[in-house]
Length: 487
Image (cartoon, rainbow, N blue to C red):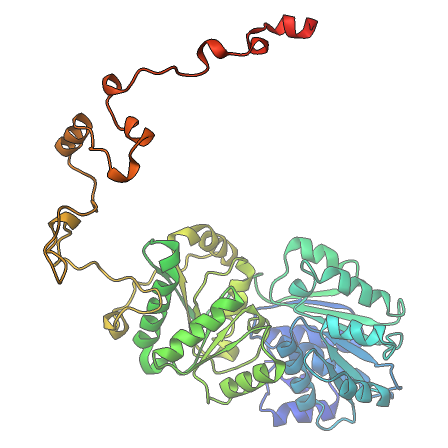
């Protein structure tokens, strides 16, 4: 079996890898590192949780340890789709470059421009950034990209997806043509996205260690179907099912990520879980960066049990010991399902992923099953004490059967006096009552005396009167159309 020592890595890099506790490379690392060290372009596709980050960080450090950075001209660039993933790449760089004198800068939103500018001015070997913040620094004249030797696009399918393509093309246009190596890594790579990579890669080495968009075999998957109901009540039912699933897993659920499709639902679900006594916090793109960092650190360190997240946390985050993933919503893009459940069962560990679905999610579920090439086993909704608590937050309650509906005119008189006749009808009158009402005209109301009385009388009781203008119709109205034209 191949060991890290068999790979063409710098001895100081190998020392850092050994200190991190790794001896055997994963398949993607074993196949991607040698051509990357040689300077070849690489297109790497592998399941999430298989060590793609080290596949480009280790050869990058090996190649960059010879040379020196210049002010405002970084030597390598790593583009990431989210702040969290960029921060994670930076942590990996610090770990594996512990014995090599290389500098780095992390350019992400939510952090002071001044601090980032100071790092760039001193010169950095590795620049790790999200596209938006990178372009902000360039437009402010604080950054030059003509000295880039290694260009890395992490999570390439998302980076090249709709909305990111113009930024990626612009950034590549700022590099000096033909002077840099390009590395693309992703867990999924649709054919149309793969065609786009041909515009950026030159004779790449393609490394595909698993069938595209497959989940690790160490992940136990399940699908919980809830009964159809009114749309406004569905969210409350799903929250109750989520609590039942967490309770049913018991102590096996040491920690978990709960994924929602919308940011607003992330906040609602996290608040609901806390209200019912669960240790939960939200994380999504609208939160302050410092809050996101604190929440993620607490989850990594075991001080937080449940992390309720949008898909910002699904892309490449490496939290090794996640026992469970709960999909509160079925993801609208089937590829996101692979990324979500890939947060558990990492590095050979076992994990469990449960998805809550309603009947209207049938098409989304079918698309996911077609993508992963297998049917997701159906799991019954578990019984839970949560279902016996008082209804709250939109949860449905069965109507009381011990109180029959009554007509309002059959109810007891109001407190303080006897009823003075039938009140307004709550239910429609019986057929025989309707016929009687139609045959007996209502008595005129004293308040509507005068002309109003006539409208409530039978036709034969009304006074004879001229309807319309009678003989007083003006002559121009009696004229024919032709006569009007002639006039």
